[in-house]
Amino acid sequence: MISLFSVEGLSGLLFLAFIGVTLAGALIATSARSLIRSVAGLALCFLGVAGLYYYLNSPFVALMQILIYVGAICVTIIFAVMLAESSELKQVTSRNGLVGPLAFLTSGILVFGLAALALKTEWIPAPCLVNRGTVEDLGQSLLTTYSMSFELISVVLLVAVVGSLVLARTGRDK
Image (cartoon, rainbow, N blue to C red; front, side, top):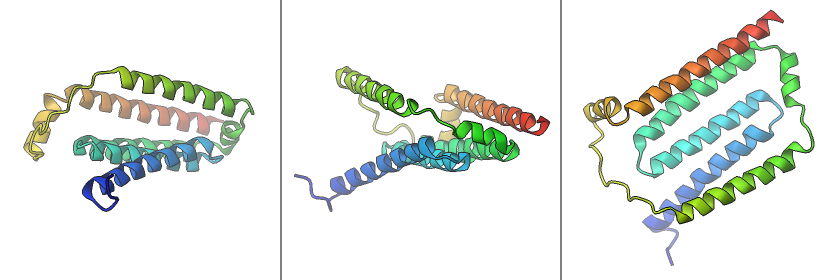
């Protein structure tokens, strides 16, 4: 039995806290009536995911998660919501009574499928130390090992900026 006040116990407690923050943010994002509150919940969910990345010994991905998703995507969505008209916001918040149970059923099936897949997969152990974490190593990793991730992040940011501009433009035309 692992004591709660040991290193393993506190580490497990921290992991559960990150999972709790992620789930709470996801619940707020999906159940809030206001779009601003939904975006705040989404930002909280992204922060929880960043904490999970940090916990899983990937501080660079955690930092990028915070910078890109919390800092850029959520701020862009907030600007788009603020620039859009309020009549569009009311259309988004109207809900069908069947959506909740169907979403719950679909997510349950998805979680069951992913859990079954995770249990059947033979996982490759993570390398102990990829680099020292200096700025030089970070830049070299960005341009060699993680170049595809870096480009995908750029595409995600570009799509978010273009989407917010489209939302803002249609909001002003009406």
